Length: 366
Image: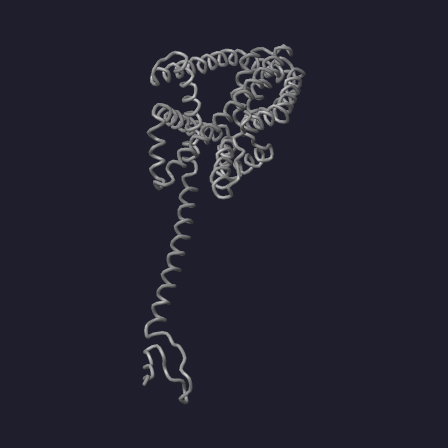
């Protein structure tokens, strides 16, 4: 004869002797509550950690931008060193030394050429300004002299000097960072890869290689644009009869590396020299720079960037605007190469890995 099953501890009689209903065991609700609390606590800690990391990165954003600038110059030095190494058969160290010597000679020669010519032209400019002041009516000349005495020259000079110190310090940091990275690129790449879990280290190496190759292609396009602008400026100033046309073309080409701001800085010495000759020459110089910058901004740079890195012009403009708002001049300076790296990460880690679609960056036809 079958015996009725005994009620378990998980069942209790319903009120009034009715049917039984399931109830959680004693302490189950407390355990579930503790589990939910632990999960919620971990989520809060993760969010707090992400926010703290974001604030920390924002605080050191200037240092990170300097390091990124050093990486750009290190890529330039490394690729040039590779070309010299293949052409001469020398080791990496000697090839890098040759590249550095050539660059120092080029930069030093350009600075000497520009310095001597600008010193002569500034002396001529001072004579022209003094002569123009003497031709003014006595009342106007007296008023200009009184206004000049009230200008806060010392404060302006102090601000300029302090800013110049910071610029020189940043340049030294970038220079040494580039030298160390170019001298031993494999050491630093392995150090970054070790921060990735073992299963993703091979992919991390591939991402870094593609990012470096893309930055090198962007640098090629930028150097071509700099050479084109410098050549057009030098030829145009020579045709206008402006002295030191070659030196001014070199300055324009070098400052072309700085988007938006560089062309305006390059035009200042040319306008001063043009004005030293005559106001009409200064107007012709201003028109020349304006036309060449329109050609460069609307034709040369978009075509080059489309060819070498497949970077849409709208992305370039948006990156420059965002970089300027977030990080000032330095952000504008590095906005385009940062956008290149971001597009590489999006193409490799999201489009290719997550979506399974073939990437289209950098372009295969370059």
